[in-house]
Length: 285
Image 1 (cartoon, one colour):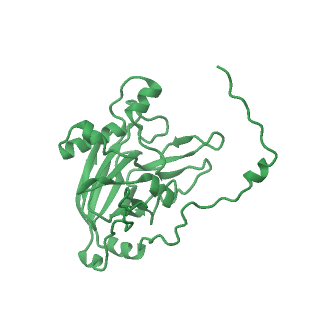
Image 2: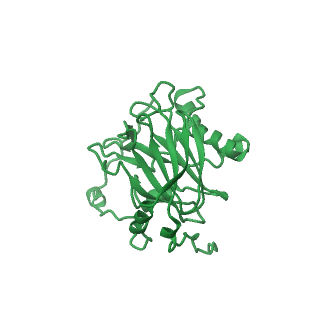
Image 3: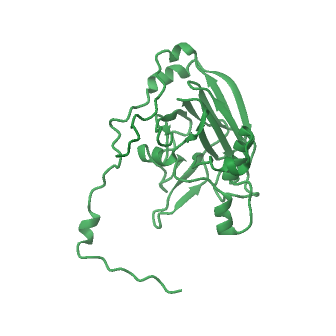
């Protein structure tokens, strides 16, 4: 195969490269999460339900508005792929791309999971994270990314051949289909880019490719969210386990995950105002 030709740099290449970076979305006017209020509510929590997610499978769960939920590591290091929908409208769902643009490639305490257009409102706010100590490592990796899209059988077929049915995309599809009693093909249209819970990822420094490495999560670790709206969630226990070697695999060590739903004392939420959909009038001109 003929190698692509190398394009010579122009005389002003250094000047062009030296332009300063500009943050795309300055967030000084973005309404910040009231972590003091949320922390006070956290002190009154009572667990009301829990759902276990088996290895290489997904399960759905419900979180009422104003409740908290936790995704918990149970028996071993395990990554989870999270989808969220408005419980009353599957077309309003988690918008990973805008969440990434408003916050960062990886999310943590105080960051919010935003919903799709035209709503663009916070669906959930991260209120606690036992992996918050990790930060950024020497490889440039962090945890809880909104970069990766989810492992899926189409990419697996493209790169490896054959059909693998326990990719997170398929797991989430089966779980949503069972939850709503709809055909798999209909459910699949609502499955979307995920929050990669506990996954440790970044971009390589040389080729800038998306990479994963073994998650630092251990049994007992959890990430916690405050439900800003009534939520339907689905969580897949990724077939890559801790994603330290591979994904879409029947050989990787995989473990269950647990979703816990917690209720705060209603008095602590008395002054809370739920978010409204974005007020843009949708005139587009």
